[in-house]
Length: 340
View 1 (spheres, rainbow, N blue to C red):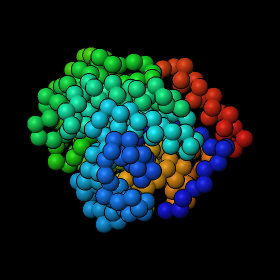
View 2: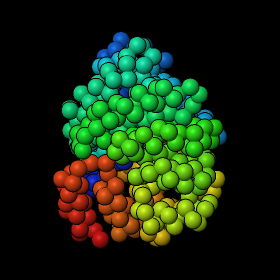
View 3: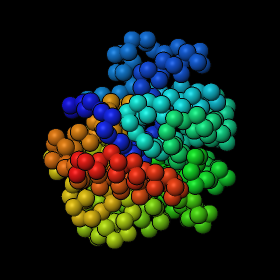
View 4: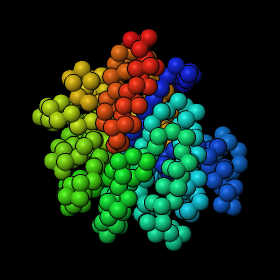
């Protein structure tokens, strides 16, 4: 994929970005020095090969193996806090004007930190962010995750704010192995607690997974790329305006869509579905958000008007306060008014 040279005339909004999937070689080196951790190599190209998804990736399960190395750098208070700050700083350099970083606290307890200590450390990083930044706490699919997910749920409620901290809950992990239906109790409680949530669905599993997430009350759907497999689900998305957090490069790499020539983002957009464009894991995927927009322009004819609609959708769907949404819309209008 051709890399786009970002210019000062662009502004981006990132709603679906995993913290552990955003650890670039440069960030990894800084985190390793800070924590006195020895990396497998100091060679940037070799390190990138370890952090980035291989070309022979077969599916989401293979893709998830790439998180092992960055997770070793995210097991201390200072490592987590600094990672949030460094990722936010990298996003600022890429002209991202607002971002939501998501992570699963239960994956960062290998050195004895509690989930609460991990959340507080991430919040310290948010305080130093050079751009408007919010956090989404991920529950995890998998064996014996129920108690840890309940703890994450309670922490999401405890630290929930309108902006500048924890703003939502998520469900991540191996969707094809652990169906969305198994997590109904967690999200029933989240709904009762009035915690907004997004759910990874319609990626490794089909449209039924999206339907389940919608039935739970999800405000957004992580990916949702396979929603086309059920026209009733598409209609429900169009009517509800629940936003899809679509990530084409990630979907291509995990083979969520086997024929990328039929990638449905433009079709969804034309059907009036609230689509947004995101990176998923900018380091593991080896991309920036500008690259994703360039990919859609070069391969699917994304127009400037459609680009603006995607960004406006992201501003509307962001888990943030109204003041921040107004700022985002004003910035987009200023950035793109001469281009449309």
